[in-house]
Structure formats: C-alpha cells, structure tokens
Length: 211
Image 1 (cartoon, helix red, strand yellow):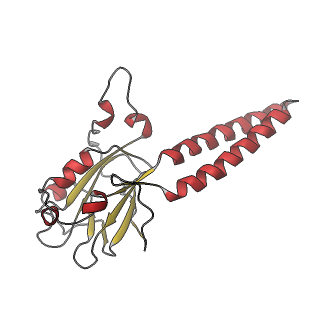
Image 2: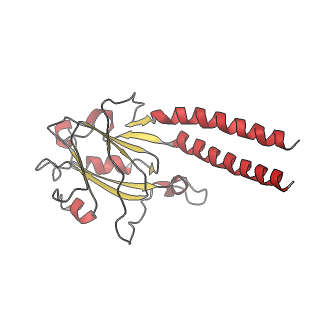
Image 3: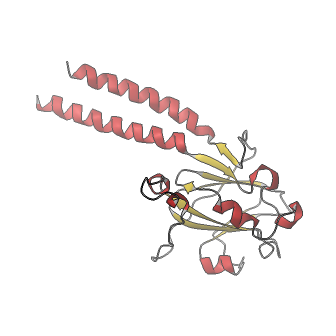
C-alpha cells in the first residue's frame, strides 16, 4: 500500500512539472531586435533617432525563456555583449563578454535582470546602436488586478555581483516572422505537442492506478 501511494505521489509531481514546462514553452517569444524593418542597424540610416532601440525595448515585456534575434549585415555590424552598466553607458567596447559577427545572432534570455548589447564598430554605439533589455520572470510580467500597468515596469538592477550572461548562439537562417518584431519560438510547438502527449499519458496512468 505504501508503494502504491509513493508511486501515485511521484506521478502527480511529474505531471505538474510537465504541465509547467508545457505552459512555459507556449509563452516563449522570439524578438527580432528593432523589428523586421530596422533590425540591427544604425538608427539614422533608417530614418530613426539615436534612442530608437531604447524605445523599442521599452515597448516590449521580456521574460525568461524569450529569445533576442539580431539580424544585421556581416562585416558592417556586429553584436557585443557587456557585463557592466558603466561599460554600456560609456560605449566601452574593450571588455566584451561575447562578440558575434555572423550577421544572424540568437541570444536566449535565461536569467532575470538587465542585459547590455552594442555594436562594436567604432562610432556605431554612440550613434544609438546599443540595447538594454530588462528580463522578468513570467510571474513578474503578468499584470496584477490591483496594479494595472505594472507589468512593463523594469526590475531594479541587482545590487549583488554580476551574474553569468546568457550564451549567444549563432545560427545560419531566420525562421518565419510573425509581425511586430516578434516571432513564435519554433521549438515551442514541438515541445508543446510532446509534453502535452506525455502529460496526457501520465495522467491516464495515474487515473488507472487509482482503480
């Protein structure tokens, strides 16, 4: 009898974990930095001002599991990630924690807080080719019934030491875009179907075990 209860409890725990992964995968979004028109380029070259990327990021709510996609002309631009706000504000390109120059760079957002990016080509960062994104958990980004509008409020920068940055992944070709600079994450649908089937099977096992 004890073994039966233990097995049932473990089954329920696994079911809850699978459902959590299912919901998380369905919510993840890929963001084309700057949108499909501007992408990652000098703002002035597309008729925008130097604060374009600040405005673009401010209009989005980034959560853990989302992805940034930088699309740019290889050789004309690159993507540098820096750790410290001081380096970001000063457009200091001397201490990057990652450098990507393939023309198509994917950055998974794996932790909360601020992440800083810039173009390392001389003069480009000071002309506005820089980006700060503030990443929240899905719970923090969800609107509160008692506090409308707080979902887009940025998180305070951690007062502790710097944390490990997200790892950049360089890939060769973009996936289909869905508009407004955001595309659905391609792996999410696959994960959703797989986890959904697994959750249904596990739930069936738990129900059968009760009889």
